[in-house]
Structure formats: C-alpha cells, structure tokens
Length: 77
Image (tube, rainbow, N blue to C red; front, top):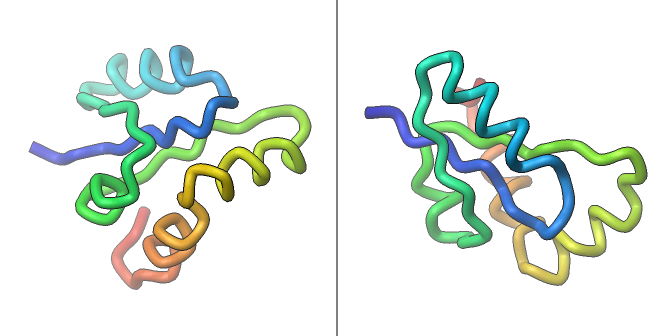
C-alpha cells in the first residue's frame, strides 16, 4: 500500500485534502512527524490563502527540512 502523508502544520484544509485523496482511492495519513514524512511514499502539503503564516507554522514544527529534502528527490510526484 502506498503511504501518503498529508502534512499537518496547524493550517490548511486537511479534511478536504484527505477527502479528495480518499475519493481517488488513496488512504492518507495526517501527520506532523518528520520521520513519517521521511518514510512516506508521497507528500501532500495542503494550501492556504496566506502562505507567510503557514511557513511559520511549518518551521515551528520542524517540518521545513524534511519537506525540502523529499521535494528534491528524483522520484517524487
């Protein structure tokens, strides 16, 4: 089974993101765990209208580095 990490940074519409993934046949996991983000097969970073406060939340949860590392990998989608 493919593991899809929906990143919880205390912002973004997690419910809608998960519902959309479930409708497409996926089983998403909402997480703020850097180690789970590192292991997941795919990442979803739900958007918000104002990204500056969102980046502050991402940084406060120490999620910036794992997100950047995964986004640089060759086989991401």
